[in-house]
Length: 203
Image (cartoon, rainbow, N blue to C red; front, side):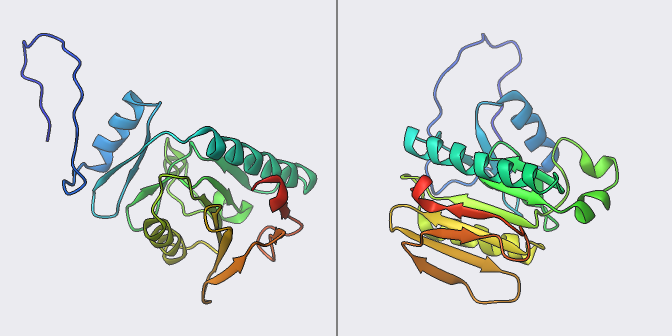
């Protein structure tokens, strides 16, 4: 825990945290941190470890924007089913982790089943569909573990887009991971029916 001594003068200074150090916070403390640092991309593991994701570069930002746009167009043309979310949205998963996919969709049935308190600042639900886009600073294994976490908590379909290796990993509930090399497009299958993501527009 980091404390500022009462009565101390207000001084802003950088704090460099080594990768070996794990900062533990409660969900309530996480909510306070997120509210006070809205320009930061924060996540929380199921074990209560705080994750600070660095800002993305322009290439990743552009790709994220295109993905969000394609998902919105699908949602609008399909009659606005369920809820779609961009990378700024955090979800409280059933295992207690607080995660922010780069894009997500929650089905109408799953969203309607939530109580009003569960639809609070961070919706207490695992998206039916979750997408992660690997940026230049992302290690691959943590993203793969994150995708498996989505499945373990109720996701039905997940895409891990990996521009560095020109690959896409497809995660489906109850099935092995499928790895596609340089695919032209991705299909929403029976989860996002009618969605076709043209990767030439993204990568």
